[in-house]
Length: 289
Ligand SMILES: Nc1ncnc2c1ncn2[C@@H]1O[C@H](COP(=O)(O)OP(=O)(O)OP(=O)(O)O)[C@@H](O)[C@H]1O
Image (cartoon, rainbow, N blue to C red; front, top):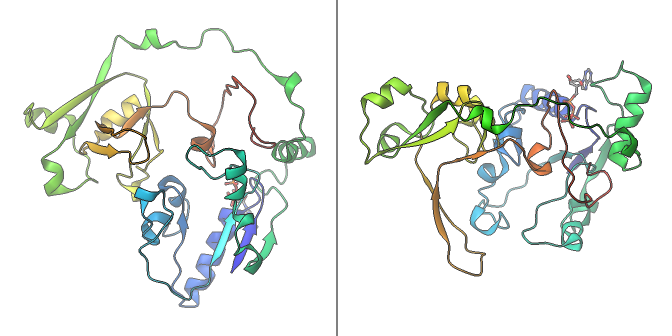
């Protein structure tokens, strides 16, 4: 078992691709997995870990119905990024559940990637700054900026609404992963089976289910109004039952959420042209920022 560790941009994804193609060329059967659907789209022939290892999502993926097998495993990741998510866990629980505290950790042979390949020819100060941020030693407090004037506010977007349709019956015959046009949906409109969710034009929404991983329509994919309307997601309602709450709760919802802002965990591993950070209170670990 091997582990590949490296900060942002050091070529982890690139290396998985190289390993995948080398082993495939040697006629080995290789399967790449990532925790989220959106991350798995970056890997060759990627799947989610839950799907490959048949993890039981109902108990927070703590068990698997997969049979044991003697396989070589290469793990990769960046220990400077985020902690595992432990429901209602305190800091000690998060630390205890880190892979470095696993009884298997000593069985892994470790390799570290060090140079930021994404900006290998970039400014040396910038490269150092990015590493310092990851190490939690960058003092960025003086660099805080005030928000520019004139950012669009929600009220400006309210006039024009668009609709996302959800169809319950067709899904059973043609599957989750098909997109159909608004015209088609209008032509088959039957209020009992077709539900309409109206969103403001310009709304940013995030999918909360894997609809079609191969086309990047996964849990955590962000879409902006027009894009969503064009693709016109066809899918059924999802019913959630949360066993871990102290009371019985069952809810049915569309698999989208407004995502003008997203949590640090959801943003992890994504690339953005521009970000605004909101820190109402201290982040809880060095390097979290
Ligand atoms: N050995 C290499 N030779 C040439 N280019 C490389 C090499 N390794 C990585 N790169 C390039 O550097 C960039 C960053 O690589 P990659 O996305 O694999 O990094 P990463 O560690 O997965 O980053 P992140 O943590 O941000 O997801 C990519 O454009 C990739 O093509």
